[in-house]
Length: 470
Image (spheres, helix red, strand yellow):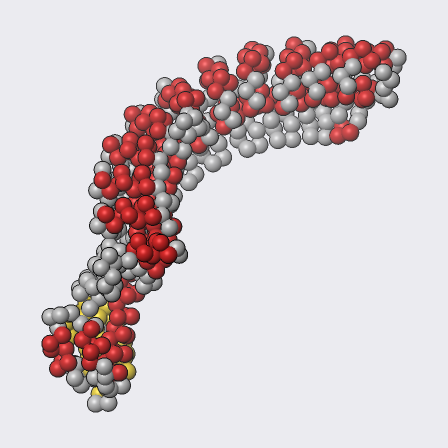
């Protein structure tokens, strides 16, 4: 077959034709596209016999292409094992770097070419060299899940205490890039090897995450157990105040959640938005974790976040019918009111979800104020006060009694007779969330007065204090 030039022969890996061309004077160091020489191309294609011929006729081992790669770097990057071995044995430099400061050993580790890693180390390759992202060969072997290469590097003395530019330790990397529940045997082997080196099991990365956070986020249950056994803090908090439980619940990692709970993880831990793990489980429809948190850890089913939303609100918004059913069976308040005035049913978009959240008796819903969230009450109580004065001004005595508790109904008309049917201007108000009481300044035709209204858990007025004329 006739070839146009040396490049054409290389593309076809035709060793005999290449040898003939070189013998006739073809330049083995000619520069082509991308500033590559014929030896670069031979290595990229792992055409080892072509590479051997080029070397025999003076091909430059140190030639760099447009990305500062030598032929050896290209061979290692492309996983061209035969060419890489040939060049190493020919004396190619193992200290060369490309534009990203990657050495041949970086590429061998990243590709899992463990058969050549030992050869490179024996010939002086720097095991702890860093690229421009502060990554070592071991870093790449771990993040690419090349177990044999990672273990070989550790056994040969590579530093396991290296921390990258995100302050991640090797334990962080093993859990972050490792497998999940059904694919974590390699990760476990690597973890156990690293733990024997005495690494800090509670090390924090730049976002304050521990290796246990990452393991829980993958539901790598055996790794979670190994880390706990090594002393991992099951209640460690990351930058968002998330504990490992917060990480495990959204993915319904029931196996990891159970291990955490047995080790003392707090089911009532709240993140920076005051959300508990139960909130996250409900929000993601994680039924298995939801059941564990309630039945095993006795998590508070009506806990509220800063917005006044309970787990039932989250489940309703998600349309997670199984979680809704479970929460209601465990006593969740279907009428809890958020800071924005929403009950769980108000957040449901599907008719079947709304039906599930409706009262079984079909009675008119009453909104509950029983909550530890002061933000919620501060938004709800003033609205109830406005409604009270609106009804008073209308003169509708039946509607007024409907706003009051049964204990107050007989006397409410006499207590507020002075303002029923009258236009009253409401001024400043002060809310006491502890007692669900609102102190209101009112302007009547005969002067300024003060009225105090107290509400029960159902949002009904249960006491009215007499006006005090200014």
